[in-house]
Length: 498
Image 1 (spheres, rainbow, N blue to C red):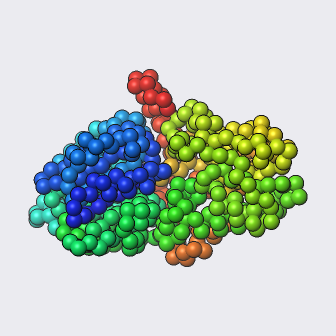
Image 2 (cartoon, rainbow, N blue to C red):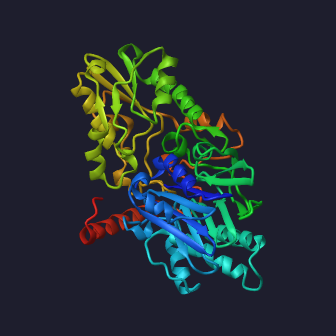
Image 3 (tube, one colour):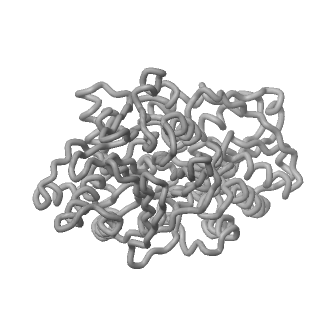
């Protein structure tokens, strides 16, 4: 999972890209980067760390130009903590291209081999994003082999990418001295939207992972980029779009609404905050069926993503609502931190329990999801140490039993607490007196009711159904083992903390 942004402006764009990355920081905390175009040159700076730590005044001064890209990284398939795999990425042929990508390819190994053996392109990292960049660059070169670069060649290249690549990808590519092109995979698994700002010199355009980066930088949200669609913006601000996939359908990742997206974003026409309120509404009905409401004194959210769901649940069931867990806002999001050891160490630094709110009470904790169970177990233990009599737990998402191979770091089923366990067994593992998971159909309805044009959802981590149709159980296990082996090698050779 990553956050991406691209801007075509009328003046320097480095500060606006920086500001937009701050608004997308929740989508990745491992690395950040910006690449701008000025005259015939690309200027780039990227490094490990949060946006505010990566970019200093001297770095910003070295990023002139009226168009550019930005990226915040959360490592995907096979990626290490090498800065070479941080984005934006760059190739010099054809024309010179910088590139940012959110998502994961499921056939990147096959594409990497094709790049080397057939297309004669060398991939220098374990990043599926570098593979995707080279596929796009190679197809753009083919499309311009008998003619000069024009919009039709760009769209032909995107069409060819759709035919070759499988998985989830939201992409923004900057072509030197020409403009930027953005496109989504044919299912629209990862979000991407476009915004416009009117200036005295003409319109400026922004493309970003979430609408919060658009409106937060003063642009007006125009629309979401459609699944399979490509949008090209030239350096004069002219916009052209084309559907480049054969049979696109809108099937966004349900986990975006559960956890990743900011509550003030609108994704594919669905206000994330409203979706989470709906999740709480549905979850309340299931809590009422599975727990004795008279035994619950108070409902508390696990901050921050679950707050709307917890509030709505408490209101529907006429239960007291309190904020008993206080979050240290200077600690990153635990789920997307690289490595289980880091997650465990960080939970108690991130959250503290107020004894006054827990002591001698039966508490229902509401969280957005339970993935590995690390955070959930420690939070339940915290509540007990703060004096709670009983601790119940409710998840606004269904049980996560399968890897998500489209951009979320949970490739190994052994890491998932619900794999091979029923609800009662998961409750025991996290030391809760009772546990309720959201039903999958209710989760879909919570989102779909806000936009009936959504045809389907990527719910693979809940039900094991993969939209791209190229994943099976054996493949999941192989990917998990490959990544574990790769990380072990990095640990030995490079000393990462993963």
